[in-house]
Amino acid sequence: MQLNTVLFDMDGLLIDSEPLWQEAGLEALAQFGISLTEEQYDNTKGLRTPEWLEHWFRLYKVSMVHAPEAITFIEDTAREKIRTKGIVMPGVDYILPFFAERNFNIAIASSSPMKLIDVVVEKLEIAHYLKAKVSAEKLPYGKPHPQVFMEAAQQLGVQPTQCIVFEDSFNGMIAAKAAKMKCVMVPAPQEHYKNRWDAADCKLESLADFTEKELEVLGGDFFLKGAMFFSLRLDSECNLRRNETASSQYKYIFTAETRRRRVILLE
Image 1 (tube, rainbow, N blue to C red):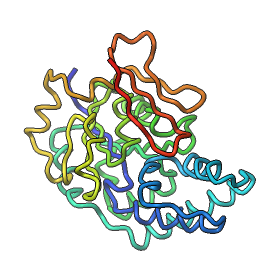
Image 2: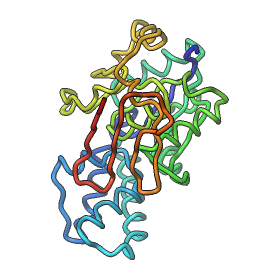
Image 3: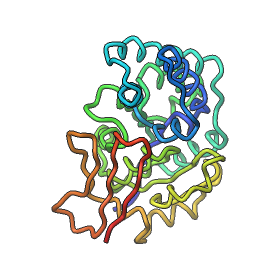
Image 4: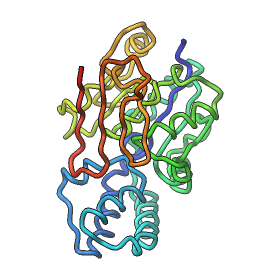
């Protein structure tokens, strides 16, 4: 089926907001005596704020009664930091016209609250490119569940197999592949070398590196590594597991409760 839609994650991909989210989150955790290493923080990138906070509260045995106030603090603080200090990512001024000139449907599909999406869209002056803005904020599931991408496809009236997803986080990559969409990864420079991105259909150093050549490859009948992530589902315990009715010979196991996220591919 012909590709005709592109879905962009927002934080860390369109705007350099990840450090600002990190500042806000760590400031909130510090109020409860919690400090995280860079590796710990990186392993929970891409999660919605409630899931992110719950993960660390449960790990460090902080009462969830404090969660609503902490969530509000994180989101309000991050929004103000991004509004005043957020910087557009390299290649944004190239990639949006690239797809617009080819008559692609263009949308943002983000874990961030809609209020923040609106702030970023206004700050970057990109509203005229977008046919949809989708937030996982009020959906039953956030990334790594594919629901936000599936919702975007539904709003645009297209099939998942017609979509390309641009992401920068591991959880976003898993969500895109679980949705049966093509996935282009643009990891942070310090993470680009990691083999955790091998399930993506394409990996770039910048949005500006995506060309007609990459588009042709994504649209071809190639069996890429990302294909092994078809037919995933999220169960009630926040674990991604292979759909038992799927014909895939691979199994992907994602455990949200573990301190380190692991990919296990079993023949």
